[in-house]
Length: 433
Image (cartoon, rainbow, N blue to C red):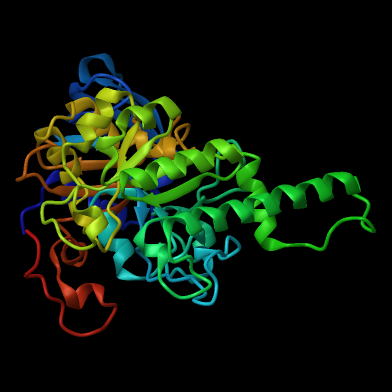
């Protein structure tokens, strides 16, 4: 076996010296900090899981006794942020209800499920895991940092402005949540009316709580649904809204304006038709790009030109996998597809990283390579827009979480069904290359 610098350092990590207590230096790569211009022949210095220095090699003094990793010829980017995924084998939802904001996907995720390792193999370090879209209000999402941990609580990322919040609220309109039998709405107009009714109820619940002035004898009975919606109405919990058709998108904007909640539009297959209205509302979009169209009829007008059209209109654009709709391991190609169809390189790379961080209210910690931010980074074999480029390593808070040169890790980068079904036995590595 040939010992490359990256493989050699992977072996060092298995020693008894904790990586977090050591100064780690990456030297020689082309660095895309995202928040600033690219740096050729760059250096990143990491200590205690955070970035302490970044810049061109001639300008950076490397500390004595630091672990220096030669990454010459490689590319380094911030860890990718997937704003919409269903990894972790979680499911949630009551088929007897069309709205249940109190449901938490947190309670259904298996953090040892191989799909999380698949995401890390794709360079994803932060992920917003969603309940499904088959309900008007499906429940609470969860923001996870894909770091080491024994429990899901070890992976939680809390909102930097509201430290008790570690996720958003998933809502949906369009065909997923219409259905035909009660209590599901059956029509688009009824969908909007049911959502409006629940938020009006939440406003009434807040008035009762305010009038009670913390008097336990006057407070209304605790209501988990209403408590969640109050977090939304107070701006502490973001709404992640699954929507495709242009008329459905406008309905979401109308509801958000009526009740004053903050939203991220997801998918927006026909967002290109109403880009100016989305921009005027100041609402970000998390989009999905595909190279094999198919599936639901309402997504028939999905165009890979959407990213460029939305960008030119002034919309903040991020990408998501919607895994398993798009494989997390192919997350990087979103930028290449978007650039090919008219998005600028800078905004496309931002769409993989910092734009997604903003959409999770986590931009102070992740999404760019800056002093003081979490040391989440991806080492690429080449140019981020090249079809030939692989994720070679994924680092989370200064720790190596994926190394393609390690056979145990590599199976999650290239493996097929037998790897990700969660079963035992034969490991198929005849999938992606």
